[in-house]
Image 1 (cartoon, rainbow, N blue to C red):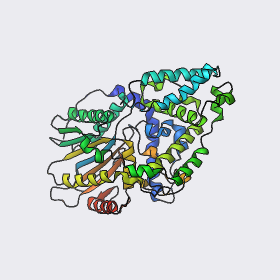
Image 2 (spheres, rainbow, N blue to C red):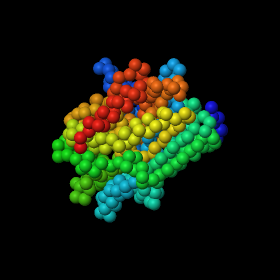
Image 3 (cartoon, helix red, strand yellow):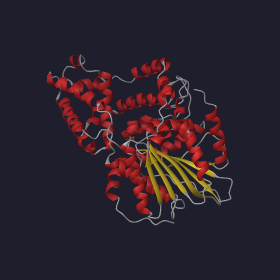
Image 4 (cartoon, rainbow, N blue to C red):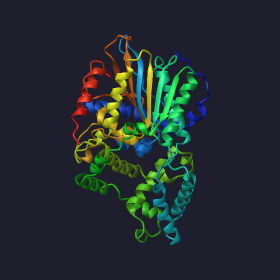
Length: 454
């Protein structure tokens, strides 16, 4: 068994815990409630609005900060079985916003209003804060933040603590990343910690265009058909129900009617809320009060709009043929092939893959983890049915397959799935939940992949 070296992570962890502890406790309960909701007719998951009222980080969707503590205990392995192989796909950690229009859109509207002397004192305060936010982000668009690096170190540490048998001695670790800098640095942060904790590990890292066909495949046909005419109509109607915020206009502009001649109310409201939520990933979170302009209901409206958008583009929505999750068919097939190869190895081994939420979310939907293979035409029922993308893809989100056997001759390989380090359910039969037989998974999903017709 490896021995963890003592090195102070306390300073970074205190910062994370101050902002995340309450959310983590909530997410643990929410994840458990969600699991029962999907498999029981008697229990309903906690609502998104209730989660947002406790911590607005949940509403940030793909910009939410990773839940980094207070994890529920893992179920002991079946009798005689020991972990020997881990297959992982994870998203990069917290980053700066990668599109400056998120900040520029409200900033330019406020700047125009300021030139016409249409800003209230609160409006001028917001304009000044946006100026500072943009200045801080300049030259860092899309970059991994310090918090992002620490998230990956913490995940690596917990992986080693949870499955010490896999990380003992000279275990081989094959780490691969997409060619995007924030993913490569995330890979570096995770593997650096592993090497520090156990210097005997044999670690290989790679970021190559040769792996992009499955590590970050973006299916052009599926993307083209994602926002079908039917989906677009339904989404527009859904958004129209949630995008008005006249209170904000009165708060920031001395003459809202005059401001509306150059302010796009929809995008102004949308991007200003997004800005307030995104900043939790950077050190600017403590230097702005933008998010305080909005009520919980305002933030909830934004969450609903974004959740519906993610479902249409990456979920199994019947509005566009329910095929979007198949964008990750190459990755799932590669995961199966890699597992078939690795479980034949004598010594433990680990495969780490670092990529993006636009891969992880459809992969989770394709596999049907925790009921995310939901098929529906109604955007209104997503939350009720438990389809909440925020539970899947916060910054540093990850999917881990942990494999177990009794010895080298054991033919009944079993495994469990961890979504963001919490045990998850799959839509296949098992006599040992949360563990599943690899042969059952392999047969079910290869058949599913073979049946796909573009």
